[in-house]
Length: 116
Length: 418
Image (cartoon, rainbow over all chains, first blue to last red; front, side, top):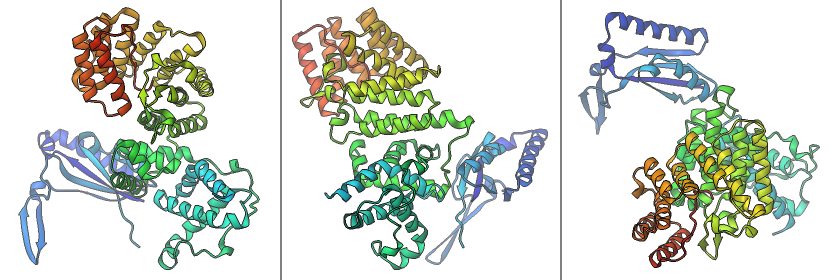
């Protein structure tokens, strides 16, 4: 199966860090990504720009409505994701547990629906 | 009901969980497994009366259900469920006649049902349905919820197992303790639902809980808490009939030991003895030991109050729940006097006005101190929080006795599973 690890955290925590701390945090993510690649489970993943860079659009009765900001405003927001291959939820949770995001925020583990 | 029908029903009850576990193990699709099994049972009821019961009914059902599962997608589109050609059904005389030859995967199913990714509130209903084949409306009745709501929650949980990829595996050594605790907790939940009626009360699930607990204890012979839970529930079930006499709740100290089920008590003692050999005490073992101390009244005519108080102290230390604190306070009241019991109650249980067992214990201790008005007030507050009609009846009687200053030494139920 494939699982999406959705990394939620409070972006202000990142901004409060010194450049050295930020570098160390990035190092943790690089190491984690390398671990996923070495184990051949990494299928994708990116870091997202901060939530105020988001724009939300909906089209209702043909009219498009554009709104500044993310769809859901909350203290912890989606900051990035990994797409991984895992045989079952326990294995996926095992990878999610090692993700640095689980240690300074929350990681939501969502299965991908396979369409043939 | 015909002999074939009876056999099908007996096999259904004994084998339901084993067959669901096997059928769902790879796909994790409990819903499809249950549907396929229901078809297989329908086939059995239709065919066995004509051709006789197969030598290995479980194997027959498994084969039919498996064929149904593998054909599932194709068949779902073009044919109704009942239209199976006779030649597609398995040979009546399967070579494999030993039911034990079918591997028992129920434990894996139980662990899937109590997986932390599934809402803890649905663990117990899920087990009752997937492992024992209970219908949603039976479970709903025991949980006092609407049947539709229960059915919906069960379907949602089963979809979660399938869609999230919750595996049918035994937890590794590292995860075993917390995962087993969730399984045992869910089984304990089924047993607690049954109170006060035991197997004799309508909608009671004590028998089912005992079956699940003994299944886990037998399949995990190295886990003392599993044996402890089996002992605890067997003790509780042994008193089912004594606990409820003519629709009225009878607290443990007032029960007639002669109306306890001796065979179940022996079974409970055997589980507890087995647990004790492993030298790793735990919450369920201590609760079972408390029940065992009370059951000793059958043989010795008395209860060792000091031993009971010591066990309650131990239980409260390792599992400091409000329920354990109340039971401990009552036990202290028995050994060191009602005043000491009341002090212990106040020191360990806050917000007693909203906790029924605390109010019952309070009423009991106050009455023993001769503070009748306060005792009646506590019992009246307890009555307002009680839903079970048998217990309401009991409390009403107690309130009258307290008001009239009648017999001084009435005992009180020490804990929920008594």
